[in-house]
Length: 186
Image (cartoon, rainbow, N blue to C red; front, side):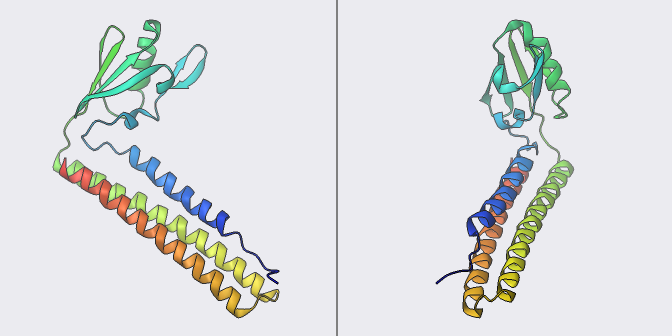
């Protein structure tokens, strides 16, 4: 006899989207440690179109502060090098044949603090997004309540949304702690 239904799956999907966005934001923070994911946003203009770097080269991490980019087509080395310079990562490519090395400079204490604050800001934005999704869900429950949903049923839905919100918020906090620890301790 459940005539009122709320799509919790949609709410969870939207909250998960906020977390995916946070993870992507965290990838853009350079921590002093080499990670192939640092180069995921790099796009190279080759063969008349724009391709992600990983579709025209292999990225490896031979040492903790070194990225190695093996460009598959030697004719594209200069284009990849140009894309890396223009990527905004602040890394200077060192080219040898079809290999490009990127050395990650060590971060000073001031820069580490700035990055930790930026990570906290990204996490707070994700929490705000989660709370906005929660508010949308609660508003739908109020509407259903005014359309005749029982108080018990609306309380069950409210509790489920709150539990999901709490779970997602805790996950964001754990991601933030992990990232800040990575920034500060390397």
